[in-house]
Image 1 (cartoon, rainbow, N blue to C red):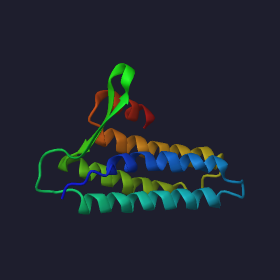
Image 2: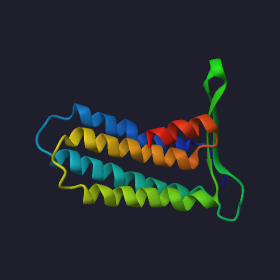
Image 3: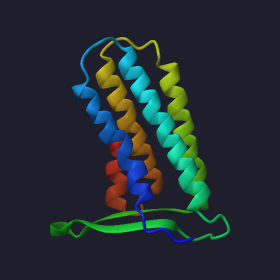
Length: 145
């Protein structure tokens, strides 16, 4: 089954873009930020599971879910993402551990907007570092992490 939908890009940018909307939430206590972040983590984990169950062929050892877009034309940088069977485990484990880390960080009360935004940004960085196929993109994701 070949899919040309940008699954890895969605998995990569969803946490950081949705997490940046935390800034616009009214301050009504920490529960809103906690539940929102937990919802995003669970949604991302379910989306990852769906993508790897239905759009990834385990018997194919080559890179799958490939994406290659021109990113910065001036320097000829590309947005290259892809994954193989070796990186399915770390990507799914990242989703599971980040969801658990959100639950463990439940008692955080000091500046929760910033904390949960950084947690979701780190989530994106980890997924990006495991799925990038370009050295420049890997470096950016590694530093974001």
